[in-house]
Image (cartoon, rainbow, N blue to C red):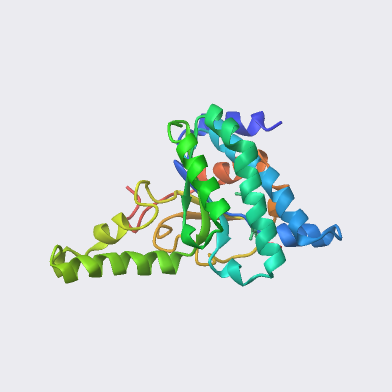
Length: 246
Ligand code: FPP
């Protein structure tokens, strides 16, 4: 399958601890096949499985997937409800397997906008998988980076107004701690599928020094091989974080 790439990754050594993915191209994949868009999303669900299993095989610690943005609420109601149904189906079908694989699922974003059954499913999968130690899977749903940062600013402003925080205590660390991603280090590698070259309001704060990997592969065609190729590319990069080479 992809064992040749995995062997090479292991030989190279340092694997990205945190990989983030913008899963794009489901609609184009469906259009190429004269299928309705929701079938592209359904095919994308299989690719999520590939990404999770590949991440476990490559010993990635955290996988953060952009599943639904706040902007996506503007899509036609039929597509939104197909996506939400798919999310619930994914949780219903995969929760026990994710748990067996040692995956711990978190959902990041404004879950208050989900329908009650979606919210309940999200809470259930988080509860049922919370002991997983092999991989953290963050699903960003109803997530947008600018509103995440605005929310952090609001939380800090509230503390300042209450008098529990001085203005000079509003610094980068204070903001970082109020982002949904606070428990994890910033992504080392961002993968975007479908050939688009943009960030689409995803993890704008957290991606400051992340290595970017854009691939023309449409998300439903994404396999663990695509993930391993991205990791191999990452392993060839030199990360300087604004410093100079030693
Ligand atoms: C972008 O493709 C993809 C999405 C908006 C949805 C992503 C959803 C999945 C991969 C399936 C379900 C996910 C989980 C976690 C169960 P697009 O529709 O923007 O494609 P296009 O740009 O080709 O139109």
